[in-house]
Amino acid sequence: MTQQTNPRLLLQVKQVSKRYQEGKIDTQVLKGVDLDVYAGEQLAIVGTSGSGKSTLLHIMGTLDEPTQGQVTLQGEDLYQLSPARQAKIRNHDLGFIYQFHHLLPEFTALENVAMPGLIQGRNKKAVEQEAKALLERVGLGHRLDHTPAEMSGGERQRTAIARALINQPKLVLADEPTGNLDAASGESVYELIRELGSQLGTAFVVVTHDPKLAARMDRQLQMKDGQLFGETEQDSASSQVSA
Image (cartoon, rainbow, N blue to C red):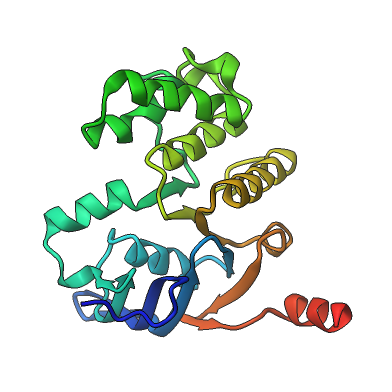
């Protein structure tokens, strides 16, 4: 049964909390977080290390389970699903980009990008053609047969972006995608996310500690001490000036 009222509402987080218990130490990382993500939007969540932003992203992607609360994707409660159904959603509807690209070192760029499509059971030749087209789109047509060790940090992240998009997901979750890059490469990766998100209609949620890079996204939220706040001061000032 769907719970959506807005047809553009893609993913909804309701009162999500997360606690970790280690011996006598109880740590609450998230404290009743609410978040709506809309189809095609590009959202940045900024915050310092340890603020809870990566934990929230992992819960949105079913990589970690909330202690309390609900996460729905197109009205489907993700944490009421079987592990097999969750895995299928991760493969079909979600894409992931990490700070450390997590490319498979023994495979070429083309093979890395094609992998999620092959896991989906799609035709190998067709998937490889799509992977080649995506790599060309991110400026790596000349790197198809190179392994990660033969590429720069920025090239590896662009390969990871192409891999995240190979199954045409509705939502891509990016965890500090520029955190391991120099400033110029980081800006290039953000511009690529902006460009591809707009062209493909894919929603992006990017967590970062860099507000300047986050300002390139459509919307910014701020994570502080396990809670998510609305517009950052920079956003509010910008909206007042534009008004």
